[in-house]
Length: 148
Image (cartoon, rainbow, N blue to C red; front, side, top):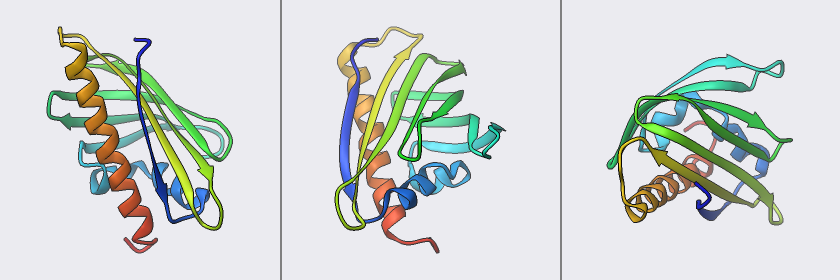
């Protein structure tokens, strides 16, 4: 599980606006593509999601799983697998970096390990598809404004 896939995108919005969309799990099915359902199971003392159940359909990877989220300051969130039907592990993070004005570079890192045998290159391709679609969807959602 040492290998991970990552990608970055620049979004025309302040980091707080980007994180606002990332932390709004109820709206994930609207913009992520792969997430068909999202349900916050528990929240921390600041009201941020601690555990979230997600129903995922990413082509080669379909699953109903629960993730534990760790919020690192205002500009980073990471997650690990709590339970899953198909996944052995899933570790990921969003890191937001202000790049001047109201622009934010978003880096998404993801590592997926499935219970069934799957070639590494197929896993990496699935990770890349998940990341690229999520970043594109996040950019469109954030840049469309709060009314979207």
